[in-house]
Image 1 (cartoon, one colour):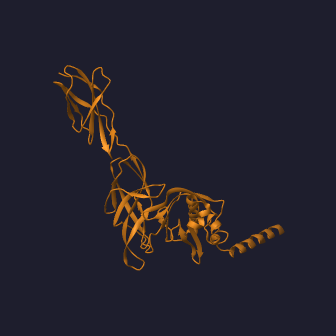
Image 2 (cartoon, rainbow, N blue to C red):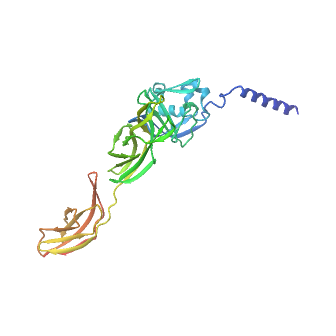
Image 3 (cartoon, rainbow, N blue to C red):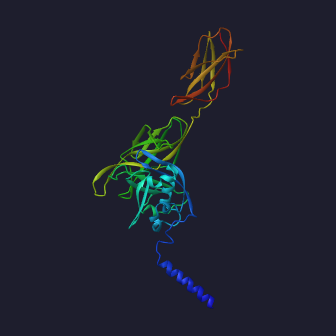
Amino acid sequence: MKKFSRALIAVLALTMVMAFMPGMAFAEGTASQKATVTFSAGIPNQYDMVNEKVTATGDLAEKYFPELKTVEADGVSYADVLVAATIQKYGEDKVTEYLGLSRTDYGSLVTKQFGHDIVGYYFTNGKYNAKGVSEIAVKSGDKLFAGAYSDKNYSDQYSYLTKTAYTATAGEKITAKVSVYDAGSGSTIRPAAATLNTVDKSTGKLTAVKTYYKNGAATFTLTKPGTYTIAPTGTVNIKSWTGADITGKIFGEASTVTVRAPKIATAKITGLKAGTKKATVSVKKIKGAKYQIKYKKKGSSKWSKVNTKLTKKTIKNLKKGKKYSVKVRAYKTVGGKNYFGKFSATKTVKVK
């Protein structure tokens, strides 16, 4: 009984102590917890990092900014990720040079981000974070975006595309809906103008792609096969915190586009008619394709070729009375490059 009473007293005492320690034991980040997230950051027209995997532990922010200790979310916070991303990009010795975090009476405050002094708007999985970065808990698999403003009007707004990933054939039109989150109204709106850009992941540089934009939808074309990172830029009309009408820039999440090489159907010779020192080749029509006809004199190893847009083509200046082998393949030209289908079955004709 005595042992029970002492144990009970000990538990009650510990409970009393913890009751008088708000925000201490449960607010402090813990090194034992770790999270790997997909992280992007930048200012309009330039990414600092784009869709990079960043791993953070729960003790990073208070390690470099000790005053945050009592306002750090348990586990891994957004602030921990900002520190980890800064280390990943610039190195551990540059954290306080490129990142500024401090504590206020209302929580944590970002004063500098990747060297940018006008900060910032912070999103997790596409949702706006109204809390300070130290109070925002994150977990593995989250997608984070940290935006810095381009000027002190603070009019830049977070943008994103309908999908995180698109697929298309080289030269094919791609249509992506562009949306903007207006932090002032808390609503989703359409940009006034938008251009799609490819993003160089190593430098963060954006290169504009010719874009047709109307009513929230941006249509563009990529002509070379490969995997691209794309992001919208443009303008949006909003009201400032004072109620005035202003125009802001849009910038935010990047998506990917996988561009495949065009698939070209196998051509088919539908007719092969001999003439005097010539032969006329007829080919089954393939939509949008041109044709390459190859021919050689029987017994020769050297093929001659002729390209044509026509489905019927006459090959001239052939040797009288000789047999010729003929085959054909379809092709399409996209972005200055020819993409070929397979050759048809070879047919033989004897010239008159």
